[in-house]
Structure formats: structure tokens, C-alpha cells
Amino acid sequence: MKKITKEIRDLSEVELQNRAAELKQELFNLRFQLAVNQLDNPTRIKAVKKEIAVIKTIQRERELAAKS
Image 1: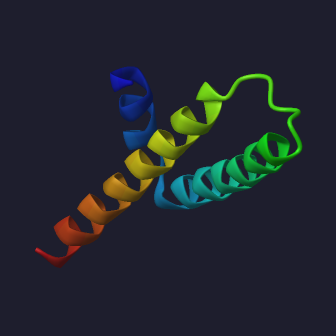
Image 2: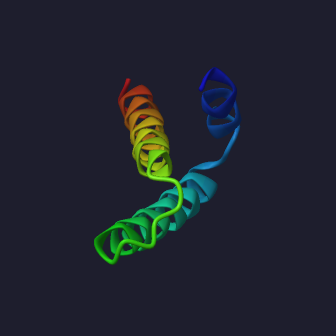
């Protein structure tokens, strides 16, 4: 997870927003697959949620740093 976090920190603000949108779409698709019993890897839902949380955390840190 640390490797993913480091890669995400290197992204620009626009890239972070795009990545978050992609992950939200993927999460929606995974939940839909879960609902119709076609999900192959249920642990992927947890991983996507964590990655979204990391992105939101980094965005918030940058927002607070900009105010300081």
C-alpha cells in the first residue's frame, strides 16, 4: 500500500481528480457485479475503497497546506 501511496502523491491535482473519478466508476461496476453474482474478486472492492480514501486524504492534506 505504501508504494501506491507514493505513486499517488506524485500525481498532480488534476490527475488525482481523474483517478478518483475512475476509481468511483470502477467501484460502482464492482458493486453492480456483486449484486448480480458475477464478481470474480470480492477483495478488489476493499482495495478500490482504500485507494479512494488515500486520494481524498492527499487532496485534503494539499488543501490544508495551501491555506497555511
